[in-house]
Image 1 (cartoon, one colour):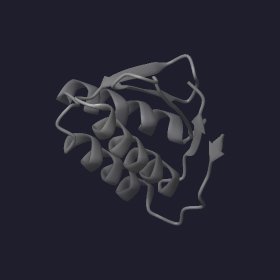
Image 2 (image 1 turned 90 degrees about the vertical axis):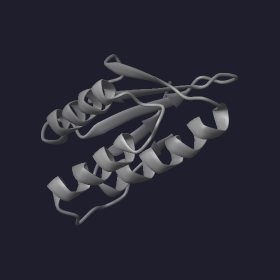
Image 3 (image 1 turned 60 degrees about the vertical axis):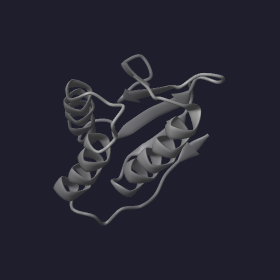
Image 4 (image 1 turned 180 degrees about the vertical axis):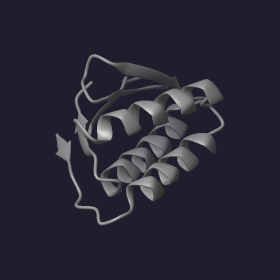
Length: 104
């Protein structure tokens, strides 16, 4: 499944929104926030695609920026927390001009 949304937002503002979401999610350490934001910024100009997926029956959510083989594994306290984050993250990415692929 691919999610896309046309975005007229300023790119810097859009990345700031994603950064804010990541930073305010208690289960994501600061080093992963920095890693994901950097990866998203680096893929924006050449391949603005984000690959995401939830590992069923677990608290794991995977994010790949630019291609499916560069993933970051996020682990949440509960599957409900993961699902809430996933919905917000995917919407923020779409609104920021990324194409989101649910593929993992």
